Image 1 (cartoon, rainbow, N blue to C red):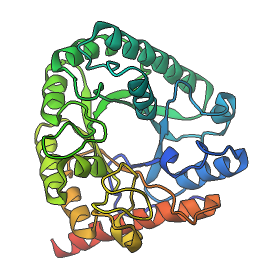
Image 2 (image 1 turned 90 degrees about the vertical axis):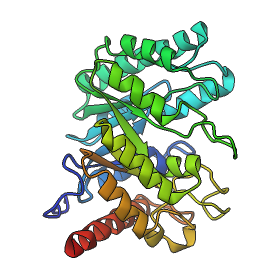
Image 3 (image 1 turned 120 degrees about the vertical axis):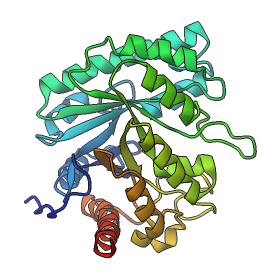
Image 4 (image 1 turned 30 degrees about the vertical axis):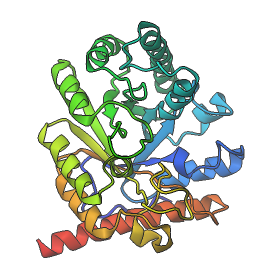
Length: 324
């Protein structure tokens, strides 16, 4: 049975949970567990849908299974980021912001395949594709002019009403290593604003922390994107400055909110959740992207992990309203 939603939603249009960060489906395929997990996540308060990965197909194991088992009425955000990173490792000039003609053409061809799968999802499942994330690869050599040319082509495709959003990932920084090394957020904002199309920006708190190496600076970046009028949503996902149970320092390991798992070492503590909520107040959507805990085994375990993060964010929001 679906939980009763709180009186005040966390975001005007709801919360999207990243199913692939929490799911074990990419390591071992258990359709029973996966089905329970998708239903359980969509039953949580405030959650209206899922972020799902596109890896060249709609599901890493069984497209037909996914079309049949994606929860009815779920709002879906499709992200090709894991696929993009794989392609970048194979071909370093690959990406929609590539100054290399062949690399950009390859990325656009893949996104045309993604658009075709959006149409399949719309026509053959009971879910709705609300958003499609774009990522400004390649690593280290992206070009704003190339991105503008790509966006002009992509906005001509049939996305079945889904909004295109640029999900900012970390860019190349002068004083420390990078994870993704895509375009700077200022370039992404500028190109999106000048595109003449309804292209939004999406931020991931953890990825911004990896880029900036400062939790306070993440708040400033959120505020800057919000001030542009392009901020569509913000994902709560943590990062750590030290090695820990979720992985190496400054890795994109989808850490939880600190109060949901104090052993995680996450920089995303309650104070920075509060600051992020304030800076992103105009965004229509929030996201939650957290890895399952090392000891999570069942779908119920994973759902409780996600729910604890939602509860931590909700508690911060409620306390902020009480003291306002």
